Amino acid sequence: MHERSGSPAVVLLSGGLDSYTAAAIAQADGFALYALTVRYGQLHSCEIEASRRVARALRVVQHLELNVDLAAFGGSALTGDGLVEKNQQPDRGEIPATYVPARNTVLLSLALSWAEALAAYDIVIGVNALDYSGYPDCRQEYLSAFQRLADLGTRAGVEGGCFRLHAPLVRWTKAEIITRGQELGLDYGLTHSCYVPLPGGRACGRCDSCQLRARGFAQAGLADPVMPSPGKS
Image (tube, rainbow, N blue to C red; front, side):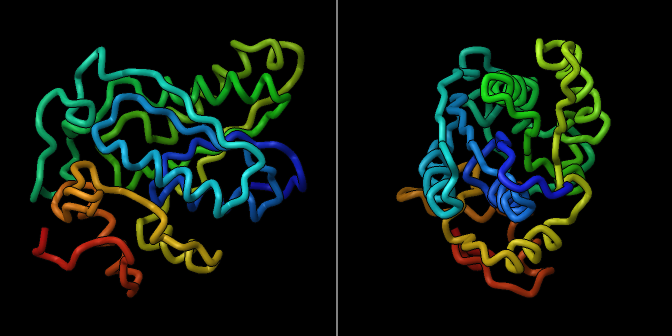
């Protein structure tokens, strides 16, 4: 990203580690953050509260929460259609059961709509293609195509504006993401990553998201403030 002091940017904020870091990077680059969190029917809805904690920590200009019930369509373990796999190799090279049909297209479309209404041309998303290689809507090719769509399908775009889709983490490892977050002074104790949290919101430590997070902290040589010790649940 190039520094654009005070320019508005819409950031998709899930409450997870990646979106928190991407938002903080955008803020460090001088953007004024407008955070968008979507309740899409995810079973791990405690991430919504995590997004509020993160938004407060970042002191965003505005934090907007929307309800779009993708659970009505089904097709994903994250919305209750099937079980979230545990104790599996998290980067198996196949599309996992936790893929939500067209989720990032839906979320980015909502972010684009708000950005156009705000006269903002920058949208930030914390996707990471290396750790989430099974998700087709986390790839750079997809992001480039969506940016083209934004310019073709909006009034702002056809009248000469140019939307910029920022995905600063797309080619970073989880360890690199965490290390950058530490450099920015982020408190990852505010975040939530687990797909199937235990009572009280504690991380299960066994789902794909927990395993990727644990591996990232281990490779970064840091302790995770929210995750259980390996082998515990």
